[in-house]
Length: 468
Image (cartoon, rainbow, N blue to C red):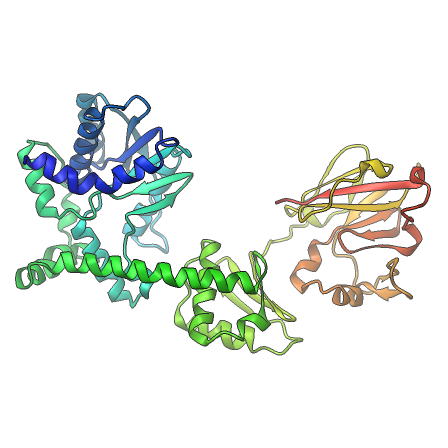
């Protein structure tokens, strides 16, 4: 058996399996091409794979090289990739990016910029292939151990994952660097060398050049066994996710809100697992054990009338009554606090991503009510009255909802309606002139409510379509 066939069978078996299961959808293969030996071998394997397929009419191949501009040879590497792809008859796109290392470090910032550049080309019919291999997987696991990661981190790099609108696959994860080098030599493939890979000031390079060679010399199967351990950690994480999904189904009130009475019934370990899973559903970085402890003590064990806040970057975990919320606070500008005049003829776009309002007459205007579509029935405004939408009105303002027996202050009513404190500034209030008519989504004022069996011509319908 030739080396090409041997390596291809190992590297492409999972890719072939995925492609077969998604054959009705995949139309494009995107190879992330750095010009280094790993990605050059991957491109060669994929070109040969496509050329040897009987049915290859529906598969297009695109290579993407990301120029980070971090090396004096960056343009030379880009030219190499373009030339190499021309020899294969493959289109190559060069993406130039700016790497902002502030807060992330140069390696993480470059990786983030690289994936963002590639993601721009991904459609629902794309599969992105990257060239990480078994030795890379061992390095990733060792770095996770250094950080004290849990099972999710110790799973290192998954072979298949969702990416942008498509999928990302790592076909070489079961292939060693030694096999890749042997293949490149056998097939007489050219590649470029990045001298920064020898700089041991970077943790990954230190592991690659100093630590792992000694460990593999002592235990030749060390990298292979690390990769196997990562796979078992991914299996364990999959089981933990299944448990968390079931618990989330019981505890979730809405996507960003959990019932505290359900959370406290769980064991601490299971509760922490659920909270991590919940945060991951919103693409947040996993909190440390210390932050998880804060959520437990400051949020779950807080007094019912307290308003604790845990900061998670741009997000916050908060409590209101018996609910725990995950929110991304919005900064309300002076412009967003202004009074919005509305002619009731055209659609009014609300600030703060609150959606839009439309107005009409008659019961025939009413649409089904759901989470993003609410209908408010009112008495018509007089022709000479200015209709406005306002926010942040004084909490001491008196209001009289149609279902209540007496007037109450806005502050008291918002408490009675169970509106969390941070949501109150985003409630749109409808005014006719200087008279409060409705708190949209909550109540209509008694003097402006209409009876369903009343005169439909006297009704004024406001349709609030919220942003999804």
